[in-house]
Each structure stands twice: as C-alpha cells, then as structure tokens.
Image (cartoon, rainbow, N blue to C red):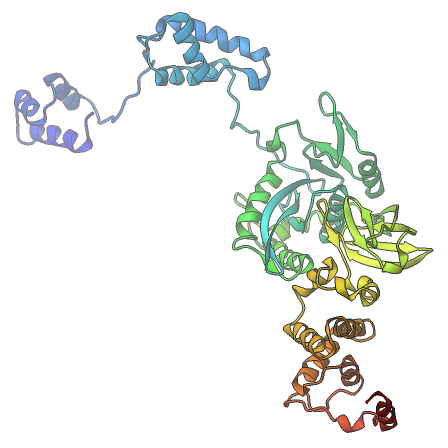
Length: 498
C-alpha cells in the first residue's frame, strides 16, 4: 500500500531534487514499477478488486449456489446457514479450505441471489391520525420497598410518535383493555387503526396471511370503541418497529434507575408525567416537537364513547371454612360469619369486590398469580376472640404483624403479662377492633399514650381515643380523674373468700 507521505516523498524527490527511480525504490522499499506508477498517476489510495478470487473454493461454488437456491422454498428456520454449508462441504464433498472463506462467499451469494433481505426496510410516510401501535414490555420496579417485576403497556402514534406508557402486574385481557382506555384518555380520542403482534389476549387463532380469529371479548372491545385491529406477520415485530423502539426507549429512559413508589398507582402517576414530558422532544429526522405534530392528529381521532367499556368480570363463588372465596386461583377473605354461603364477585383490574344478597361484604386489591391470599385481619378478629390460642399463628395476623408499629407488640406483651396469655390476647383483640370505629392513626396514638402512662387495659386505650390528651406535642400524661370512680362496695365480698 502506498501512503500519502510516501507518494509525496517520491514525487518531490524526483521532481524537485532529481532523484533517480532506482534510488527512490531503494529508499522507499517499493519496486521501480511502483515508483514509475506514482510519478505517472494521481494518488488513488486503495483500489478494490473487481472480483474476489476463491482458489480453493472455486470448484464448490456451483454446489453452494444450488443449495441456496433450493432454500427459497424451505421454511425460514430450516434453511442453510454458512456453518451448515461448510460442514456439508467437508463431509460430502471433501472440501479442504477454511470456514471463513465459505462464510464470505455465502454472504456474497445470498445477496446476489436475492436471498438476504434482513436489515432492509422501506421508508414509509404514515397518514396523520390514522394508526397507533401497541406492545408490552417488562421491567423491575420498587413498590413499597419491595422489588417486583411488572409489565408495561405502550401505545405510540405512528405519525407524531406521541407515546403512552403504563405499568401493570400482568398482561391479562382486562389489563389490556384498561391500558387501552387509559391510553385513549391520554390521547383524547381513539385511533381508527391499532396495530398489534399476535398476543393471545386478542388473537384466538392465526390464519393464513393477515386473517385472524379474534377472542370474543377483544372483538367486543374493538366494536365498542369502533377501531380496526391490525396484526403483524408472526415473528415480524419490525412491522410495528416504532412501538418496539418505544419499549426499549421507555425502559432505558423512564425506568433507570428503578422506579420507586409506595403503590402501583403512584408509580403510574410518575410515569404519566414522563410521557407528557416526552412530548416536548424532537424525534430524530424530524424538525418539530412530538406535541406539535400531534396537534395535527387530535381532530382526526375517533371520539370517546359517552361511557367507558365495562371492564369488570362477574362471577360467583362459595365461602369456604377459611372464610375465603377462591377467585381466579387466588383467595380473598370475607367476615367469618359468612362461612359456607354463596356470594357474587365483581373482578376488576385493580379491585375485587364480594357481595352477599346485594350487599358488599369485602373489598380487596386484585392479586395476580396463583395461590395468593388477600386477607383482611378484621374479618377474623371476632373468631380469634373466641379462640385466642390461634392468635400468634393465624395467617392474617402474621401478615398484619409485619407492618404494624412496634407499639402494638409492646401493648400485647404488657396485656399478657398483666392478665395472662388468653385474657391478655382477648383484651388486645378488643383494641384491634377499635379500628372498625376509629381511624388507625387514632388507635395507634392512643396505644402509644397508654404505654407511656403504664396502663394495662384495653379500656384505657378506648378512653384515650374518646378523650384524647389535649397537648399531643408534649410528653402526654393522661388525666385519669375523669374516669368513672370505682365501686368499692364489691371489696366487702372478699371477706368470705379470705
């Protein structure tokens, strides 16, 4: 190879200093023919070969071409790779050359035969306000101090690039519907066409070409909002490449570091702010902001219905001897007095409500997964009052105990010391039942005051809620003078005992 410096040295040496071709060849290490060429032509750098020689592979090139041509009619995942061609040449044809040579020729042959189209795309100009793309992603989040793996839904306008992202605990059909409804509210209308991959929550069966048999509920949902569902060719996610890119963009930019909040709702509120902020960006290749482009789309979206789609499943169940109802493979508690009765259940995306004879008897956060227990401790307090021996090992109490303040454990220990284990436990349960009539914060404050006052009675805690200490900021000292006076006449009965 002739460098620019060598080209300059030869030309100047000959033309300015009159050096001979022989001397220049000796000084540079190039042949005399090369020196003559430098003196004759302009600097051209590298010159690529017109054809790549394959001295060892040449006898086998026609065989390779035949194998590649035959692959056109074969399933995509059962075609020859360069490795497979190399192995066949060695095993069947006695090829003695190297594998990289085979790989290089196969790459060229596929391009010449029109077999290699991956990585090639057709530039498109989407119509204004006509299509959006939908996809799911997955990311780790921190909810209430615990790391969870959540799904996140993405809906992206194909024209403007405006994007909506929302977290869910599952990809169930109800979650899909709720995500759409939240997305429609975000965009202020419905895109006439939404493009999906072949998710099972929407597609029952993939037919030839673009034909699909849709899930009945999904078809109802599409009809209610009057949009057309389009689907990608199986394993061709690039057909909705815009939203595929949004999944990665959202994970890298909205979810690093790990999003953290006390609840899923708070997490989604923060995510909504990030989606709104993203509208102020300018997409690569564009000159205007996303929000400016979306202004052209708003008037072209379909209007929202007067009422949102009823995204609630209605089912029935029977309360078992654990005072729970099994719904969607998970257990939800009801008050123990309803054990054995039949109930109706409204199953929403985030809440599960249980009714008996038209009256709501329980409400829980929706659980996703299998064999999870959603237990309200209050549903079991009346039963535990009759069976205090089961208090420490009761599942609802153990779950509650993880989160309640240390003052609760301190009061339980004091009551048991003063009254005995069973009576002390019953008295403590009476304190827990105060949460039915008063705010949990009020009960907790009263327990803390009672502990500082050194009392050992559930009645004292109740009294402190009804008659709270006036100065909550100072070290509270209860005014016990307002308590009813004790009836000392009963002490006369002790004489017979003594």
